[in-house]
Image (tube, rainbow, N blue to C red; front, top):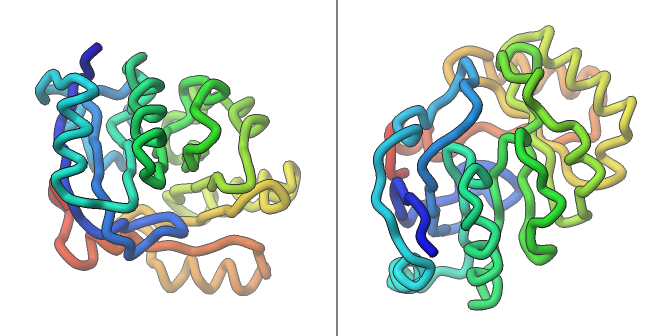
Length: 212
C-alpha cells in the first residue's frame, strides 16, 4: 500500500487551535477542488510514492508529538485512511486537514478533523459535503476561509443556523493578502461571535512558499 506524497516537513503549526506547536506535516498529492484562493496548487501533481512504513520512518526521524496530514485533499487517496490509523497507533496526536468534498465518516476516531467549510467566495461550495458536519466530534474543528464581507455574513448565518460552536471549535480565517485581518477581527467583536479568529502564522514568519 503506497501513497503519493508531495512533501513531509517539520514546522510550526500555522493554523487551528494547535497554532505554534512544532508539527510534522505529511502533505499528500492531489485535490478534486480548485478554490480561488488555493495556496497549495503546487501539490496538485508530482510527489513520490511512499509505503506506510516509509512514511512512518520519515515522520519518526523528527521525533514529533504532533502530526498533520494535509494536501491538496488527503482523503482523495484511499490509503489515507489506513495512514491516519497507523499514525494514531504509533502514539502521535494526529490532525487531518480536509476540504470537505469527501465523506469523513470513516476517519479514525482518534484523529482531530479540521473541516474546511467552503464559502461562496471559494468557488467550491457546490462540491462541499455539508453532511460531514454530522460526523464532527468535540475534538474536531470547523474552519471558514473568508474571501470578503459576503463570505463572513454567510458563515455567520450558517454558524447560527447549525449551532456549530455547540459541537466543536469554529475558526474564521481571512484569505491571505485579500481580507484585512483587522477588519475581520472587528466584525467578529462587533457581532460577538463564539469563534476563534486565526491568521496563518507560517506565512507571517516565512511567507507563502512550500515546506513551511
